[in-house]
Amino acid sequence: MNWHITGDVQQFLSATGAFLRARPVQNTLPLTTAEHVRLHGPRAYGPEDAVFGWHDGGEAAVVWTPPRPPVLSPMSPGVAAELAEVLGDDLPGVSGPVAAVEAFVAAWERRTGTTAKVHSRMRLFRLGTLVPPTPPASGSARVADAGDRDLLVGWTAAFFREVGEDDPAIEAFVDDRLSYGGMLLWEDGGTPVSMAALTRPEAGMVRVQAVYTPREHRTRGYAGAVTTAISRAARQAGATEVALFTDLDNPTSNALYQRLGYEPLEDRTVVEFSS
Image (tube, rainbow, N blue to C red; front, side, top):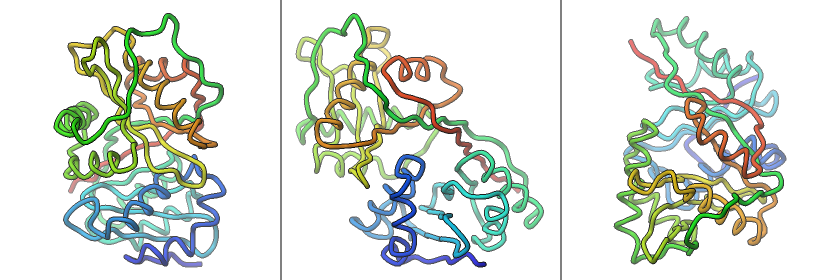
């Protein structure tokens, strides 16, 4: 059994689409990443071409959009270790389900002599029954538009800084989501105070992203309000699954999303490699 590595997103989707779409929440990152590359080209995420892979012995896939680390789908430890033997020679790290990442890291360290450290620990959630916060926050939601672009770019950059990511494509992130109504603002007294974003739907699944409230507007319930609003909008638009990731080192957000009806599904790890 072998790993197949390609830069051709259509070839990747032909080989993996059926099994990725069969479990769209667990495979949310490979699905949404591949679709974004399909729509916007191989360098949609940065200055280098995206790389894709699948294993012909079962349901396993990888997507890599430099300079970000490769993202593993759920896979057996043995298959993950095999991938570490063939996926390039200079990786910044790896991300994915805990067991798969641990197996990949062990094989990578043996092969290259590099060391690894945990960058972040995440938990994948899916929405069960939406439970709006009580009492409700002051204000209301609206779909963001082009007139909000500068505000959204600034807030998105601040969000990525807070979660420890240096994203080189923030403007593209915002522009893409504005193109399909995928960003929501919560306003109080006519002033924007919080935002949230959605991915494009894939196999009936969308993922809530970039929930951000500037520091001066925090502790007033706006994050819960905008998350509720965008989750409800996703369901009303036909999404059968709504997913999101949380940082396990942030107990506040983990508790908030569970109060809103999000159910934990599995844990993920992001690891950095160093020489």
